Image 1 (cartoon, helix red, strand yellow):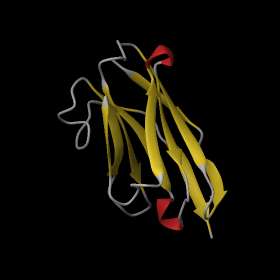
Image 2 (cartoon, helix red, strand yellow):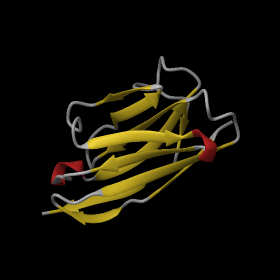
Image 3 (spheres, one colour):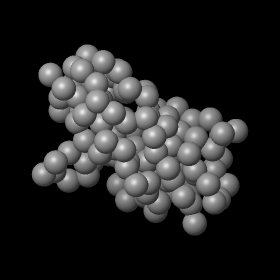
Length: 119
């Protein structure tokens, strides 16, 4: 089992920045693919970004969000810049043993952290 705990969410104004963190425990973190998803009110959960050596982003956040990881700290981060009201959502950290399903159906999920962008 892998346990994921997110932090760093909050309220920010349009154009502002936030950095989300996710700390993993329970398994060897280094080889896992890690990702971030989000779910806005009334919408389905959607993929945001993933990392495992390479990185991939949803088109809606490309150029504004940056995913990174620190294997020594068993942590993955999401730096979010130039935030927009449509970025308001619950953000979930995710992990998968392989890259194959990290953008669609990862095996492990965190509890989520709320990000609210006010205009």
